[in-house]
Image (cartoon, rainbow, N blue to C red; front, top):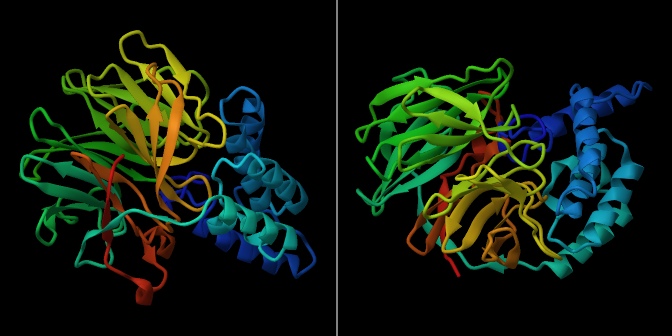
Length: 418
């Protein structure tokens, strides 16, 4: 996560970035103090926010999901304390009834006392009521993991959970408590984010990143947790390797949230090559492969792009009316559907999107759990989807826990997929 990314990384990205989370709240508090002295102040990242607004405006009419663009613009204007345009853009977004819910988005803190904003939220909750289909599968004993990535290994019936705060990976047996798989003090790792198991050889690949510094590494571990190799990006600039998928041949494809790119890592030459996609991406995040590796799906702030891995052709997936594919954090392929944890639509939710035969249209959407507060990624186990319910990422500012009394065990929930 980096500034402006969905609630998931750094904080998060995870940072996510905390244009819309804690960073935004703190900036707002500092700004209010400044305003009390009679001098309006903008957040420190105002120039970056305005550049993102310019990009979003350039995509209006060019993407399949107009509501996603409008929501992003509304949240960005609210972060700049430009309340009138923020409210107007939010109204235009919510009238489309796609599922956006601003009530849980700190970007709109400046609007929460507005009667118009409260009316909008009331209508959203009428249109999209509470959905509870999951149940808690297990909890961790540790309360300060601040997890980001979750993966399942059928070979040993275990889950792997990455920790941003402790910069480590824990293994959780299906019927047991967590143990360190990669201890945090062993390899001087960066905060550990997305994680996947290579089904061909059982090794573990993970993304890691320090969002503030813009440094990142792709990590490769053997089945015992020993570090096999670590790879840094070769291009200059800030990087945040985020989520990963592993091809049967050994190559890795990953999202680089800060560079706004999707990279293919060649396991033989150890080089990174950007993939071409149909439109400019903003904070690419979740990523998923189809069963036979014919296509790759990449999620960003505005939707999901499909990439044909044989031809290289790419196109945006059409969410259809009254639906959005925006702001997906974790993304997974399951029997012709995409399962996503959506953090970039205000109040997060888990949803399954059944795709058309060509993979370019969401023929049907099923909300599986909503609303959530600080979820992150998930993992598939047959027809069950496990996901992190409470990263508690809003209680972490960089390397500092804000309130020790709020610490709670990590809860992993499970829901049966349609």
